[in-house]
Image 1: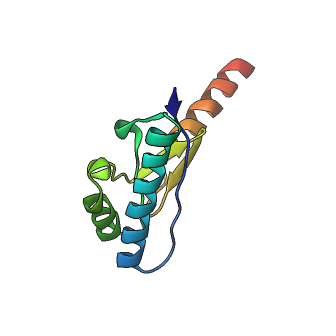
Image 2: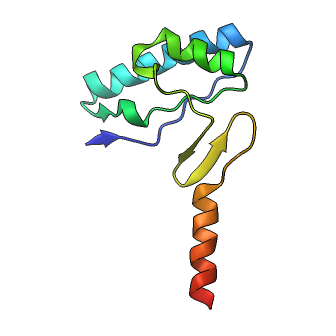
Length: 103
């Protein structure tokens, strides 16, 4: 069984956000893996932040997050971005399928 589709959201000042996010991620991952016996996929982890420095600081605080920095991500079929342009890959693909089916 794989733990999937969990979001942690933190607001505040940059350094504070990085610290709280890393500690919250550490806690949740440990609980899921050690207490619930659910595997958390490191490859599917994603850290989005309003600035590259905040994302880098959060990722540097926890080894499991080292390669988790992303410009955008999707969860439960919804596209997310913390800054910059949002790429709506899932939504765009679904609209194309619907339009094609209507023809």
